[in-house]
Image (cartoon, rainbow, N blue to C red; front, side, top):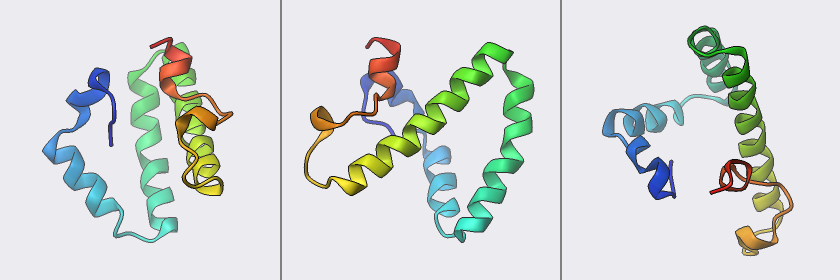
Length: 89
């Protein structure tokens, strides 16, 4: 779930278990799960924070698709910026 020291705190056993369990669901069930989480996330964030969250989710998907279509090329050759680049880390 995380590959950075800045986000290492996210490697929480309960979160890991939930993610692993969600992976057993069909893709449509996982989409429904994510859609069910969005209102609570949106309610807990400011509009600006929510836009940032949505941007990071979109970038995560784009980077995954890019990596999948260019296996073995590594992070340096990717065109889609990751969170580290966006955040200036």
